[in-house]
Length: 266
Image 1 (cartoon, rainbow, N blue to C red):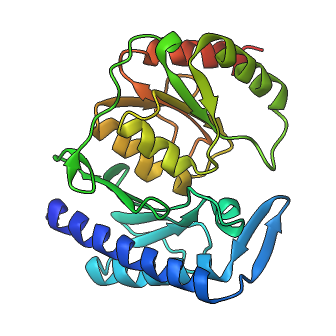
Image 2 (image 1 turned 180 degrees about the vertical axis):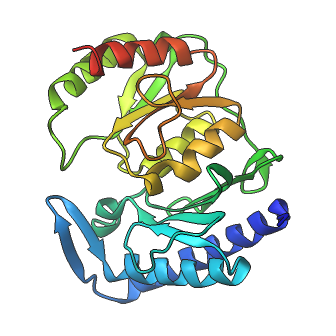
C-alpha cells in the first residue's frame, strides 16, 4: 500500500489542532479528575478523552493501522502501520496550569517513522513533517540550530520522576553542562523539547527513562529538520530504548561523547 504522506500528515495536523481545542475547552470548563498511575505519574480524564478522539480520527484515516498509546485506551499492533500517541505530553504541567503540554502523534511504517506531529497547546504551535518533506512550524519551514560547540549551546533535559537508579550520573551531567554550555532548561515535556531542537530554540536535548510516545514524533522532527538522534551509545535504539540524545549535526559528536562518558561509563 502506498500512502500519500503529505495529505495524511495534513489530516493529522488538523486532528491534533481540533483535539487541542477540545482539551482547552474541557480544561476551562470542568474539574480535573486526576488519577495516579504510580509515583509522580498522573492521568486526567482529559488525557483519556484526548486519546479517544485522536484514535478515532486516526482510525478513520488508516483503518488497518495499530496503536501504541500512553493511556492504553486502545492497544493493538498493526501488521505494517502503527500510530504512536501521547494525548497530553506534560500532564503534570497540564494539571498545574503550566505550559508546555503537547499532543504527540507519530506514524510508524514497519520499523520507520514516516509522519510526526507535535501540537503544543500553550503557544498554539504545531510542528510537523512527513517522509520526503521538510519540517514545519505553523506552515513555515524550520531547521535545527547552527551552533558549533556545546559552549555556545542551550541544552534541554528532563528530570527523572519514577526511576532513580541512574540519578547520580544524571546529576553529574547537570553539573557538567551548567559549566560547559549556555545553560540547561527543563520544561516538563519531552515532545516539546524535541520540537524546540527541531526549530533551533534548543541546541540539544537528552533524557533517560523515556517512552516511545514521548519521543517518536519529536525524534523524527529533529531528523527532518537536519539534526541527529541516537541513544546514549550512539546507536538507533532511541524510540523503544528508554534514552535519547538529539542535537544539530555539528555539536552532536561532542554532545553524545559527554553524555556517554558520564551516563554510561560512570
